[in-house]
Length: 250
Image 1: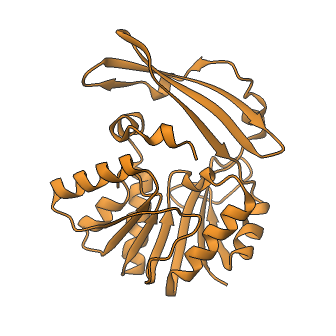
Image 2: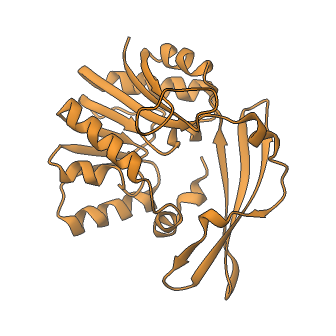
Image 3: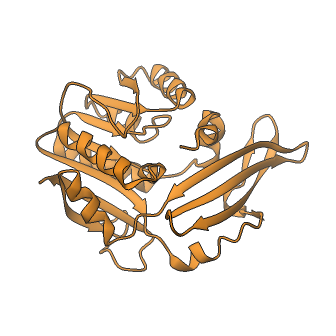
């Protein structure tokens, strides 16, 4: 589950500071559904807190204690009342139903086994109120990019950021792809001029290919009703970067 990668919540937020199109999309979904909202793998609350600020009752489920602590801190600063729950999205029981359940930022891809994904989908279905929707985004696997995962450590310039204590931070990644497991196994290296490799963490991410996704959802009692290839509702095509999926109970 790549726990160490999420052990420094503020470092994570500096690494991924953007995401405005995704925030807007999930915020609009909350408006569309007009009721209670559950985010699985909510992280530090970057998607959920804007929805809570719109006045919707929100619950965030997160496995990482560090991420959940940061989410609570942010909510406190904003004086927002959010129900934060430490739990595993593979199997959970919150004792109530929601009008919108969502999983953002490829978080579903931390579930490597098909059985874990199906278990998650079954838990989601059990928490959907009548007329509710389950929305999530995962990347659309690129065979070329997976084939290029050769284990060589390379700098990712687009991920560089400024740390208030260390200054400019460089991010290097070395990845290999396990085709049998459909899992990319990577090691991420964070370095500053004054402190090379001050943080090193593994990150393992599954690929879910477009044709298998509806089958996994169906096994979990869900039906894929729409799939988009972008945050503005672009049609899903083979070369789309993202699979943005809208599901309902079967």
